[in-house]
Amino acid sequence: MIPRLLALGAGCVTLLIAGCVSQDTHTASPSTSIRPVRALLITGGCCHNYPFQSAQLTNAVAKYGQVIWTVVNEGGNGTQAMIPLYDNSHWADDFDVVVHNECFADTKEPAYLRRITAAHHAGKPAVVIHCAMHTYRATDVDDWREFLGVTSRRHDHQSRYPVRTVQPNHPIMKGVPSNWVTAKDELYIIEKLWPNAHALATSVSEQDGHTYPVAWINQYGQARVFGTTYGHSDETFSDPVYLNMVSRGLFWAAGRTLAN
Image (cartoon, rainbow, N blue to C red; front, side, top):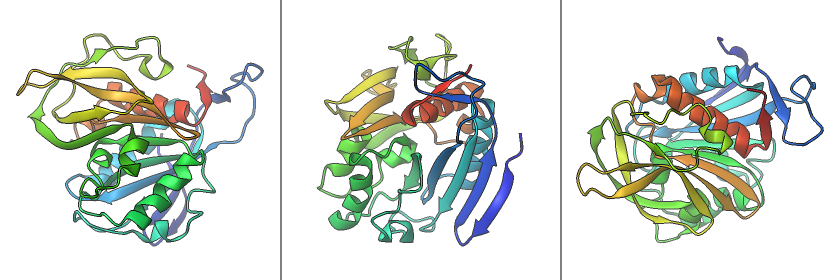
């Protein structure tokens, strides 16, 4: 399905994606008419094809539910930026879930960082993708890493990595085959899985032979967080298995139960 363009502003696009989803309650049914999920996608920075990734992700959710997307691509293509979105401490108030797919490794201002994490700690759900794990890695402040649920500062080479699902019954992993091998992507080295984070899937490094989480869930304050370190290449964002997992992760974080 092609997204329907609703509004366009400087660095910001709002899209409506239609599908079928129900509230995460015992009383709702898939046919219940409910408010669409309001999702904010924050993207930009170094090293990736963010326009393509944003289009692929927003289109992918059409299979699963109705989402009104606001896409913010600010900060240029370098490794350091303090984007205008976060100037307002209420930046996340209008959204049900925030997707972080930005890459600003060298930004390290603690007050700026905590304007982001404070919104999530207070209960704003999130999805964190690939280079979000290396964003703000230059700072000594751990708030962002605790929010992510993992600490990572480097990655292995690009390859096609076999993925082992460790929680096959989790709703995010529904439809992920036991023999899934990624598109060509980077394996992030996870130095620490934080106490409130739980791995959903892992891959083995071709360099050191160690096993690392590649998909997980985290509880940060009052917020649900789903994360994956995969998401570097256009090929990954064209992989239906990957898009299924991330789409399901978004609805899980937002507290919605999928109809399929």
